[in-house]
Image 1 (cartoon, rainbow, N blue to C red):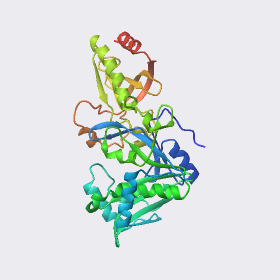
Image 2 (cartoon, helix red, strand yellow; image 1 turned 60 degrees about the vertical axis):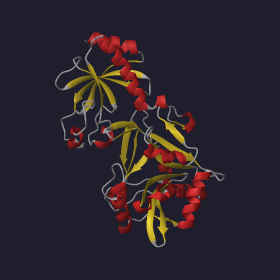
Image 3 (spheres, helix red, strand yellow; image 1 turned 120 degrees about the horizontal axis):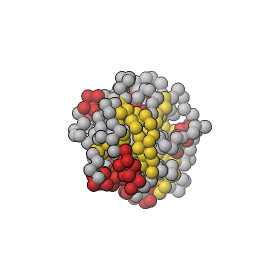
Image 4 (cartoon, rainbow, N blue to C red; image 1 turned 90 degrees about the horizontal axis):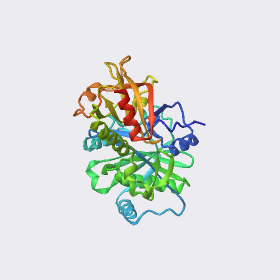
Length: 360
């Protein structure tokens, strides 16, 4: 049985196989499929911002009932189109629809459907099924979902942009949920949503979802979700509070976003990467050409931490450096770092300020 490290923000495992029982355990701990690997992350970067990813799940039962608005979508589309559930299969027809969908999609997608699902290989280690929706003989939408013993997880949904007015992305997810109910599954995992970004809000519509609270690793009813507890927001506020005190003491610092926060799942080398998405860099304290004193706020234990970090430049990086250089402004720390030494920790804002002063 795998022991899950609650302190890590991002992890990734390469798989030779995965049993349905194992998938249940990974899903219950906030992991998700990526190609032919399985990963977890709690932060995302898109639209020139770092966001928190909040994992969701829906409890299923025999008496589960969709809300009226969702029943209307199902009824309308089932009367107009044909729905089929079948084993996973990649076809040229699906790839063509995927390419049309990708052109219309506002965001980043894998270059091909095969690369997205199989990392370009021919073997699928997951137990995958698909929902297909037809207008007559024409395939107009499809989605893929993986089966555990007690769980299902939605992987991706694709539709022909010509049919965008029919809510087909949501429809395929509802059909996945219905399949879960019909086969006696207990949980459906739609992936994550991003607070403040409406692109992911459709996942909140499927029913009375729960969210995985990162600090406790417990699933909680979504009405208990609190905006002020969103990890990236909380870390930002706490560092800004420290910055206000340092400014009064005339200590030079900069609060920066760290675009390398997913180094643990992107880089090949197993090193203690600085994975905090927002950091306070002390400009003249404990710094030389290759070493930096960085203050982070660890929202898991509610403590400030001082970390001596060094530049990661001994090996080639898997990050796209051209992408890093295009980051729009000085609010990003564009140099990758690894943690060299833990220096100090406290849950007190004043104590953290005083410790920094003594180091000045």
